[in-house]
Image (cartoon, rainbow over all chains, first blue to last red):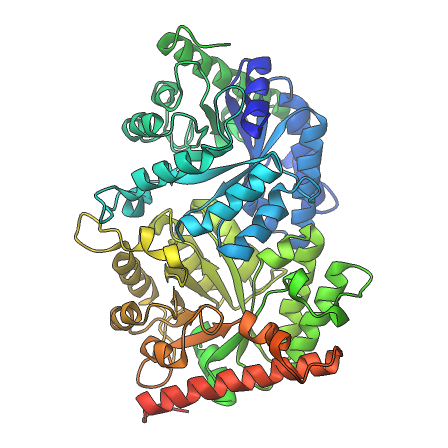
Length: 302
Length: 302
């Protein structure tokens, strides 16, 4: 069993390929969570409450490292604790740190985030590919050795993502397609029981046409799909990120779930009502994505 | 005065544009530094001793985050402490973390590493550009607001760096030249007293032809030049990274200095003799680069 298998088992169990980002932007947190002794203490409590609230609905959570690192070593420690807590609650952890470097430096980053005996022990790590394949193979290697997985940025969801990813190489391939090919190659020797590899790709929900083509190029890769909701990707847009078995992608939403309370008439300022808005938004997303998948892939396996 | 000015003042004072990387690869550290209570305690002592040994020679140090992050929150704390210690000793800190993301996430990373009131308070941060310009502007903005600077990866020193950086965009420019143009544009409104901006570029010592062209495209950018020594770049190779004033670049060596002891007959196993090899290698590099610069640019300003 590789990390892709563990993810798919959780997706089947929850009947849900949607994950929730844990991005604590301090100014957006409800004031009922801004009253701990320290900001990091508040954030830890907030994250644990979110995990408790959605643990029966989602297969994994995706904490975004920047929002912890901004509090220095103490923030890093909170990130470690959140990862452990999510595991306790049966959730997988997608560590969205977008690390990148070469050689032994890449190896050190991979161990920091993915080593079984490491302090974070994440199941998945996002990796940025600017330095080329010799910056990717060390991450893929450490991931496999630890029964973990990586998501390589291939086509991100932001407006300027095309500036680099659509450039054409001498061999006629776009950077995007070259990366897709690299992902497929690197994952080939670690295909799990469900047919998916331990080398995945980040493919934004905001570019459905590109997603369709990338899906064909990386049949065995799991896609991490950001950009759903707040960034404009719809449930209809994301079906092309999946295969006909209903697997092959996890869709992330962060702001659309964490900050749904800002537009919720049911929110009365209490933690209980805040967490209810989180739960409601998580279920809403699950149902929308599941319905869109069922409509496109009637033979999906869950 | 911007961060480029502070760097140049230090370069003039030390008559040296070379910096030393602080990359503690545990297995390569001399055994006289492997006997602290914990690995992180050993590494902190090692880094402080290196800083004491070279503080009168170099303008800055470049700690590589991966080799600290691998020890989790405790490693992160040691990184913070090393940054503070380097500042105490009059050195600038080039935080080589190659962070990258978009929007508020990029902002959080930039604050984590560059904010004056932050726990690291680095002077410079390396930034990876795969996501495009909307992932770079938040870093540039936070840097300027805090009197700090960034180095954007433009042409790295590793063998596969061409895979993405040499691809051609629709406008006919290579990714590399597009990034050079972006660096020049982003830095234009923050030019310091010596004529250099707060947005710099990473340009590898291993590609001197490309460096020559990039130098022309980014007249006001400071280059961080890795790849000297261990990675194969020579003193002759790196002169094209500089302008005729002798400014415009800092050259880094890590392994060539930190692990020179492995081939030094003078090394007797003691910390004293280890640190002497570090000092000797640092002086050797300074003299080689200075002589190459003087030969190419007789009118250089220091």
